[in-house]
Length: 314
Length: 268
Image (tube, rainbow over all chains, first blue to last red; front, side):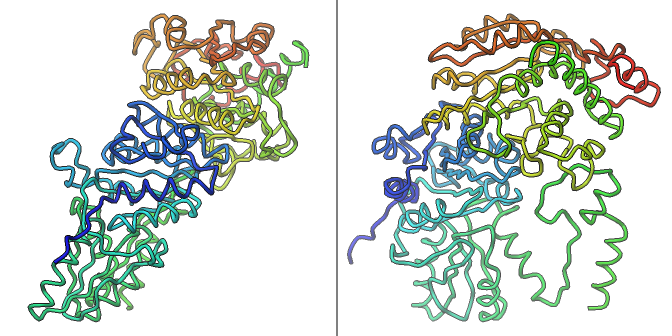
């Protein structure tokens, strides 16, 4: 049997961005002294004049990227996920997402696959943190090829995006010929016994598991989620329904606030439970008198009553 | 505008700012009044501005100490970028004059700010962007002296010097006060001029309420170096009972106090 080709998503993205930059002069690549690890060193070699080194200063990395976007450029800010989505979180919130700027943030070394560095460097919270931001799109390619394709999707999408990439070389399970788009899930295996919903490196691992299960007579549907937000619940719900309501979510991130909770949130209504939500519905706040602001966002007793009454009648 | 006209404009803008805060019932008069003269000098004497507040040729202004926005709003209304009646609706729902500057809601706001330290970082990115695009736009920013306790400011200052952003001018509004006391009590800034010089800035230190000094400093240009102007100011400048009073960082005057402020500022 031929050796399985293994490559890292960080390198797929980096290769894609360098190719893309040839056609788009507005692309600027920034890094915070991790260029050799995140893959942006390749961009630096190809386009030194469009490479901005922020130094070991992730907050300023994001602030500068926001400023570049405000002059009409298309900045791609790179660091490890733990620093980009963690340390710079509030800069991303207030200087990128709040004004809805065209800034792309790519956090590499996500999850626990950067094994040697230890827990300080293994980011398991970025999915929850970035999902929680209004205006933010969250991407998570499953292999080298998909990461390469996603560089183009990132560029074409105008607005804040976060993409998590991985350090570890993993098997390639998708093709550069795939037609993928932001917000559309991708079915990699068809089955009706159990529905597996996976993202990032977990998809490659799931492919192996699904193929072994098939040999044992269990046919799994495998849905690859390259866009965690907005989440394609239609495709997921159809797959889960086809599999008799059995769903397994796989992600290399903390169980809280990640893809699992997003899928569960979307599926809860399919199990006889009637679910509604009175909350801030993924939008930023604004100035106002306190009463009128609560009214605007539905944080009122009257709104709770209205939603509860509507549920009671369903 | 000559010095007299600038002073008269500043008086009117201060009055508008205090009226807006009083009407809103909340806001930050102290730091608004310390930074007013700098904003007036920039908007009426220095910056390249156009009828369309989104004209890409315009110079940019970043109020990094975003809570000091009422004078800026009064200026944007005076310039016609926003209808004057909006001054009645500071901090109100669905109105452009938000509690802190919001570029998505207010024409003429070049950068959303409010979370301290971030504006200066974005301003550095803007100046860098214009340099990369070979555009001549100038970028002006005002940071508060208390604000520079935020570490990101020093990251941004380093980057400004590293990238030789000589079209960037940073005012430090040095009024010496912050919410919990004087800057020296809360977290002393030390020799700010020496610090900024060491960070690679071309330095000036002026009286931030003297238009001759503000404009003279603004005319300076040092090739290859960003410019920092330490503006020694009085928090609450122009309103007798607010001047140098810590308590007037973030509260609105009541009716009686508003009357006094109007008298101090020569309003009706």
